[in-house]
Image 1 (cartoon, rainbow, N blue to C red):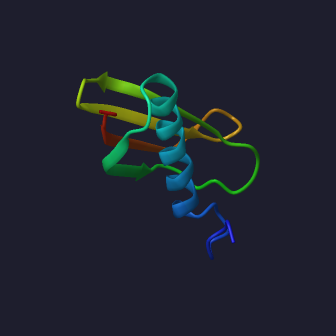
Image 2 (image 1 turned 135 degrees about the vertical axis):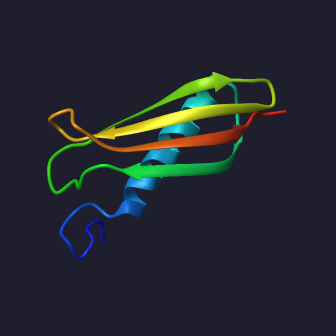
Length: 90
C-alpha cells in the first residue's frame, strides 16, 4: 500500500523514489556506485496528484560524491528533500 494510515504517501515510498533519482543520475554520469548514507527531511504530506523528483550532484568527487534529491507536489511545492553520500564507481 502506498498510503499511510493518515492518508498521505508513505515516507518509505518517498524515500525510495528519491534514492532512485540519485542512483539513476550517478549511473548515467559515472557508472554504478553505492549509497553510503542518506538523510531525509519530510516537509509536507502528499495526498493526491502527480509528484516530481529531481536528483542532482552537490559535489562530485573521484571517490565520494554528495547528492541531493527534491520531491515536489503537482503545484511545485517541496514535499521532501534528501541528501546522500555516494561511493563512486572504481
